[in-house]
Length: 134
Image (cartoon, rainbow, N blue to C red):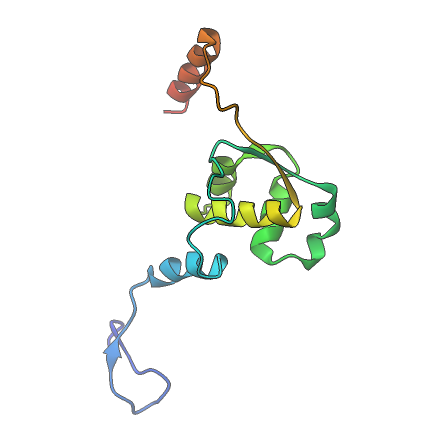
């Protein structure tokens, strides 16, 4: 029997095509967010800074493992985008999970200033930082 064909459940059942190796990775984000694709806070910015709250630390043992990973990681303040990158999550999944934790009170979210930055020194530092990671 080839690797591209399997017999599901029954030894002598019909041969069916095997799922591609990356099929599980397509299903996992759906499971991590309980099928949701939009965050509870649909305006959560990827640059918003998040940090674990005291309640989050106290609730650590009762959280699902994806939530635990985020609560542990956010012991140090970081952006939603950093959470996604460090945990190898799709940014949409990270936004849903972070918004869930914030709604539970496990994370404190600090929103970015809505006014555009007029500080040229800061803009130049950001550009140099981005060029440095290229």
